[in-house]
Amino acid sequence: MLDSIFFDQIFWGNTVKAYFLFGTILILGLLFKKIVSKLLSKLLFKLFKGFSKQSHDVTFVSLLLKPIEVFILFSTLYSAINQLKHPLEVTVFHYTKLVGKVKEAIPVSLGDCIDRIFLFLIILSIFWIILRITDFVAHVLMYKASLTESKSDDQLVPFLKELFKTLVIFIGFFTLLGFVFEINVLTLITGLGIGGIAIALAAKESLENLLGSFTIFLDKPFVVGDLVKVDGVEGTVEKVGFRSTLIRTTEKTMATIPNKGMIDGVLENMSLRNFRRVKFAFGITYETDADTIKKIVQEIKTFIHDHEDTSEDGNAYFEGFGASSLNIEVIYFVSITAYNDFLAIKQEINFKIMEIVMGNKSDFAYPTQRLISDKSAPVVDNPIDLDNKK
Image (cartoon, rainbow, N blue to C red; front, side):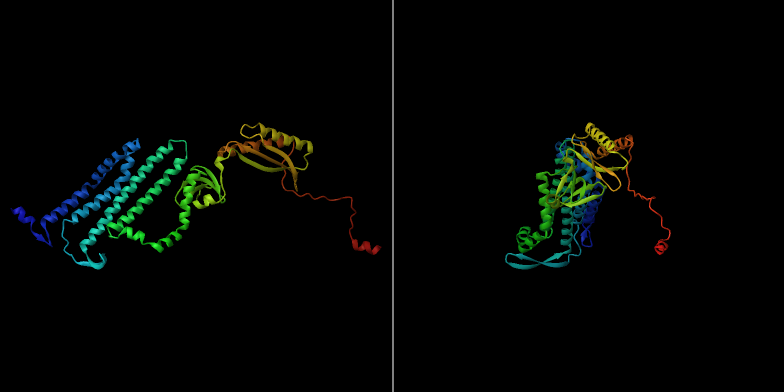
């Protein structure tokens, strides 16, 4: 009886029982939110365990732990505060709402504002959880894609991940408008009218880039990991997104190219080529006679033809007469396209050319100028005196 009287006492508009429930819910929620969040994460993982077929539970829990903790925190605060009657049940503002065909000014109290704030935060945390689950599904799909030889799935998974997350954010935005702000979403969408057309025109370039990303996935001019060259940018494709493609250049910088530019411009996929071409010229000294030049050219040509990593259509020939050298041009194709291996083969051939030139008693030329004086010409010390004698 005494306990009942004690709990029914009222202070600042609320009973002791209400304060007790408020404190109990708040303390229990704060103390056990981490434990409960881990438990909920593991329970949710059981729904995806058959999908993953691997031990990804640690990744799943790490992704879901924080958003579930936030969800439990907001839910706990909301449940605790709802145990109390707000002493300041005053009207904060009015908003106009259409009831039938009559517009009415509806008062909004402090309690209504608190309810809407917590509803906003709870819905936000729910969609955060959905986004993290999307990240986990994409993580599992990327793991499965890494086990296949095709690179198309490695490129498709990040794109689908971004697409689905964008849809979730879009749905979450309209959910907040509908439940928190009580806006008729269907009326809002259909009422965009001319404004919607204006927004579509403003987003024309973004839409073109989005369509460009779909074109890339359908036509497959390249996949992630390919070495490409477009608009003077050469590098390895790292990611294809909604709006742009990320390319890691040969200088190890990151280039961002709009997807529209990737399909509209001239794109060279160097990963699909069978050979890498090498073409260069070098000069030897003018003291080299014709027979030696023929021998040098023939030995270079033979070495290139016999090399196991070059094609048979390589060639070397006496190109012409330079200002200070006799020029020999060399062209060949390397069958190994990996860049480091290609450089090693190119270096090997360059060293061999040096050996061939030096072995034939010739030398490489460099820009020189030669001054020739004619010693047989008479030397006139004083041309004025000579004229006087005439």
